[in-house]
Image (cartoon, rainbow, N blue to C red):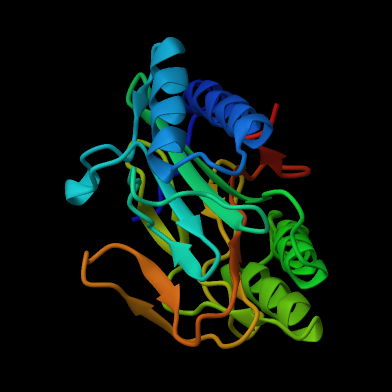
Length: 249
C-alpha cells in the first residue's frame, strides 16, 4: 500500500534527508586515492551518529556496512572493505541512508576520483541529469511510469544503458515501501501521483550493457561486461506544486 505522508512525517524525513546530504557532501570532499572503501564507511557512520541518527543500512538484511561503496564496474551494494583501495581515475558510488525518529532518508552519488576519463565524467553527468528528467514528472496528475519513461529516454538518447534489475522505491517509516519505481518503461501507466507521496528515485546507468551480475558475496552488483556504472539518488516528496528534494542541503 502506498502511504501519503503527513506534514509532520515530511518534516521528520526532511531532517533525515538533510543529514544524508551533509554526509554525502563530506564524503565528496574527503574521498581521495589511497583511501579504502572501509575508510568511507567509517566516515559515513561517524557523521551520521554525530547527528544523533542511525545508519539505515547497517544490519539491513544482514548488510555489514553503513554505506554501500561501489567502484567502477560495481553498480550498487558494494560491501565496504579494507582490501578495496580507491585509486586515481576511479569513480566511486556511495549510497547511504539515515533513520531519524523512525523515518528514513536515502540518497546516492557517484564521485570522480582524481583524473577520471572523459567518458567517466560524461557517465556521471548523464546519470545525474536523468534523475532531473524524471523529477519533471514528479507532479500531481502524472502517472508513475511517466517518471520511469523520462529517465530511460534521457539515458538511451545519450547512448548509455539503464539498469533494469534494480529500481527506486517509496520511502517513509521503512526504507523500501511501495511503489517500486523502475528507471524504464512506457509512459502513462501505474498509479496516478498525489501530494504527500515520498519516493527515492535512483537511476543506475552503465556504459556498456544493461546486464548485471551479483557477486558471490550476495550483495555486490557489477556490470556483466566490466564497463563503468554510475548511480544518482534523492528522496523526493510530491506536493500540490513542485516536488521537493529532501536529500539536499
